[in-house]
Length: 308
Image: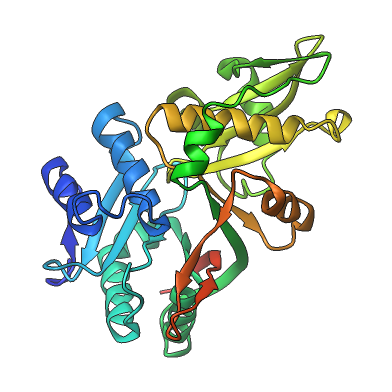
């Protein structure tokens, strides 16, 4: 592993890293820290997905760039890059990307493919590395809008009592019997096997609604990287608010468990984006720009094939 890349996976080192990057909790409500805070809570308190998660930071002293890496034997590596709270240093970012790619060389070689999720600045620097000869072929790249619930929104939503449409009930997922169907309905599953969805359902928060016959109507899950994900309503039950209900209910579970509520919506899903922007309990991630104004951040999910 490169000397300047630190491994912070060990519990004590991870706790220290969390304190450092959040300034001892002062910046817990900043979007860039949510994945770190949620996943570290998962692995330090609940265990899952501890065996799959690694935390690397660059430089190893006074870290600026954090990489949360999911290495799962059944799927390709998933790399989350934290946006620095004080903004990007593109030269340092380039060095950090080279370092993490070197550190993950054996995993990338074994799996051929990996998923990079990061803000669009990180993606552009990765594209630059490709143009300069990095051994990766782009399989997919997509832009996503990042949304979250701020402190007031979390406080308000947890006190809300939501109305369930007539003929439906709030329920929990019967994992052994329903995980395969839920996985099949996931549009971004790609090559991920359904066993991964089963693990997440068995270990992380989820919620569903059912019709009067007890059949699944809508649901939402938790990704092992910390975000709410895979919101879905079965076609014949759409147009009744069941998707929004499932998301509100999962958000309440998150807040009660001390988790940060956030999600990514693909930019082509215009209806969900509009609905989220109208929703009183969602905010768009914004940062201060160089002119002391605010700019909306864009997130990205990108799949690359290793060709080295």
